[in-house]
Length: 102
Image (tube, rainbow, N blue to C red; front, side, top):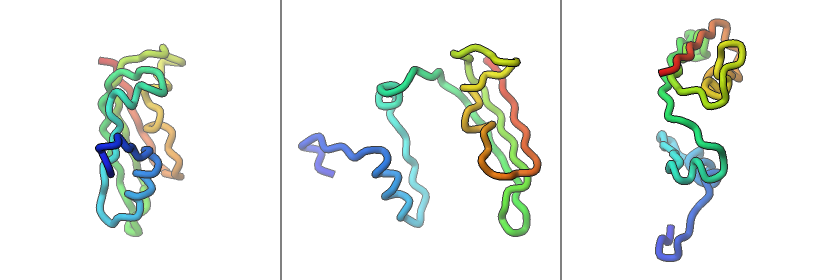
């Protein structure tokens, strides 16, 4: 990357390049980049764990999120606070998650 011309790659192109590697790559937005195109989100803590069967498929998933509510609770749940944790795209038979406010 040529930093003298302030060239910047998009996050998507970096993610695509990282997918071609055989080692993990951590892709993280800076806080300035994160809030530039979206509303501010408070800091959050998430702890995730899963159990796999003999073939490596997930059979249990647990998520715990601690986050301040910025959209208010709906039926006792902060939907934005658990987004991405509670919205599991896989057919996992045992799913449990918790939401806590500090």
